[in-house]
Length: 251
Length: 192
Image (cartoon, rainbow over all chains, first blue to last red; front, side, top):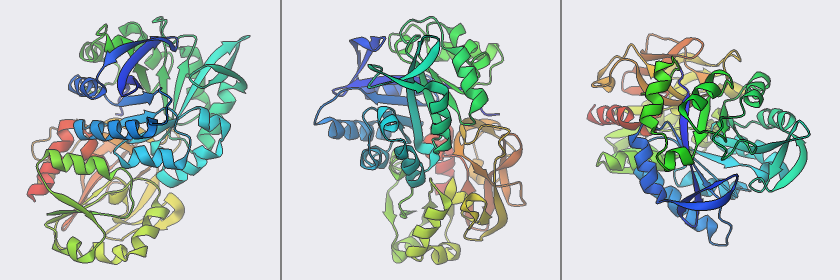
């Protein structure tokens, strides 16, 4: 049976891994290649690298990092952050990334999803969606969660799936950094309306949160950053306990 | 020398790195001479079937591959294209294995993405790999169970996760992305 995936996420800034709370207050979390190797040794199922730096040199720094990561690890990884064209996507894919994640660029130009999935295949197109509840409606936010839009999370997710995305990475900004669990209600709704895998993101604090998102949130994968980077939860322990709770997991 | 068939398939870099980690030299090439002379040939694949077949035809690789005599390993879409036909884009494959590749039904999420276990392992390709080992898979289409099946997996139904006919091998999973277990499969292929 297909297993649920545990995905550590590394936010990258200037070639270093960083982690903040609610998208703010960045702290240094170490060398991304070294961190990546540690996660592989702990049986992480996949990794995501999100480049949150914005500079002219960005693409070059990022492609160098992708190459180093690809040489060092033998599990799949996704790269995102500022990918806004076929050229950007190609640059990371040809250097060894398995998937690209697009976010704001997809909202601004939804055809990018179609183009990328036709050109590289659905399997390597992850659409990341940051959303926040405003007046009891989930609204999509752009540019790392800074800019609110009027776009509804569920409608956008449907369009994303119809346009050929292989996977959705949904981050609840209300939950991100709070360590109070994932947005399981919204996640379960997403799984009921679209038929591509959903990665839950934002809110991981304890092991039970992962169990809950796999059972109540129907998530296919769960992403977390700080609880892994700062050693609060070890992936090996997490997987052992999930297995004890009869969740299908790769050991 | 290992030849990786170059037809612009996705993520070749990871495959090259995986071979490098095994201390093996490989070349990425579409040159007939180099492919014919290689000890082993890897036929990778990712992306859409139609596009892939188009690229193969442009270089005449669709004629060359079925005639190869050394061990050939098709990976993912590379395995599916060893077959006669695929529902993906209603495309004709290389016809080495007589079967039709089908799309997963929408009862399960499509694509299947992640780690699934493989069982009923046969042939030396899986020597040292334990039954029910997890491998990394990402695909929307599958090869049904056949006489040529040498490993199965289950995603809503049982399907061929590896096939073997004469000198041709195919694996649906990505050995280069399946951690140490995947490395064992690659190593076994190199020993054939």
